[in-house]
Amino acid sequence: MTQLRCSDLRTKKAGELDQQLNELQEELLSLKTAGSRNVDKIGKVEKSIVHVHIVQNQTRKDNLRSFYQGAKYKPKDLRPKQTRAKRRELTEKEASCVLKKTERKNATFPKRTFAVKE
Amino acid sequence: MRVCFFHLLYQIRLDIYLHLFSMGPKKETKDAAAPAKKKETTTAAATASAKKTTKTTTTTTTKVVTKERKEKVKSTALKAKQRVVRGNRLTRNRKVHLKPTFRRPFTLRLQRQPKYPRRSVPKRNRLDHFAIIKYPLTTESAMKKIEDNNTLVFIVNIRANKPMIQQAVKKMYDVEAEKVNTLIRPDGEKKAYVRLKADHDALDVANRIGII
Image (cartoon, rainbow over all chains, first blue to last red):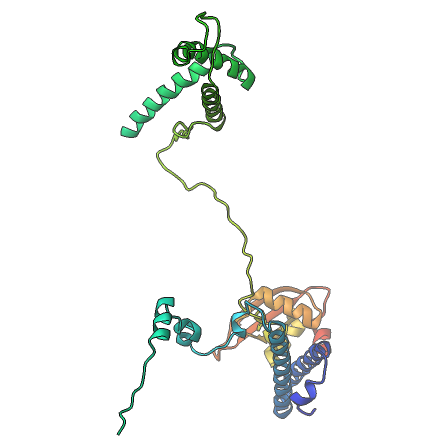
């Protein structure tokens, strides 16, 4: 029993992966039941199970991200993680907001630079 | 207290007002009410209008009513009717409380209509059947249990409880358990003694599983 690779598993369909997972888990149980434990084989099977889970979760996540692409409200785990504080900061647009009065003032009286002519 | 007093005054005033308008036939129809009040006010206003406008005859039977007066009477009549229908704001039927305690009344409780699921994927059940049963025991005492007591002995996930173990065994090995006894070994593993129902033979099942 060779250890399954993620690259091989990604070509399979969702239903096939579920089936593969079941088979692997049953195989694992039978290996553990046996009187003398084949540690090598058990390790390989366990790793294969992990790889199946990896592929399943990754494809599921990718599909969900494309599903929620451009949506106004996304599930929280699909939003950018950043840090807690950064998520609560004002957005760039919000921070650059200025009163119309101030805008007008800045437009009519911009900061001038002068140079002294030698 | 103050509120009560004013409320009383208002009540009295309203009662008089309504009484004035309900004179005549007791029917509450607009038609019945309108001519009734008209009759009332016109006789009173007849003399007044007679004094104002000089184009009337001097007989008391003629009813000279100015247009303005008509409008005013109509509007007041309408208002009175509305109030009767609507119910006066200040006199509402207050609920009689017979007990000294006030309990919050039942209010509308809406179901959640989330705009988005908080988690994109619901959490996967980590304690599935494969995770519950780790492996069956094949020690000498376990063998004895199989032969004598028709039970199978498993090492089981420590977070599994007896009903969980029963279900897992049923699903994995297709056997029904009569009862499950559990204990936690000194090395931290949970051991489950699963006594099978009389129609199952533990020995056969053990052979099938691969314990023997």
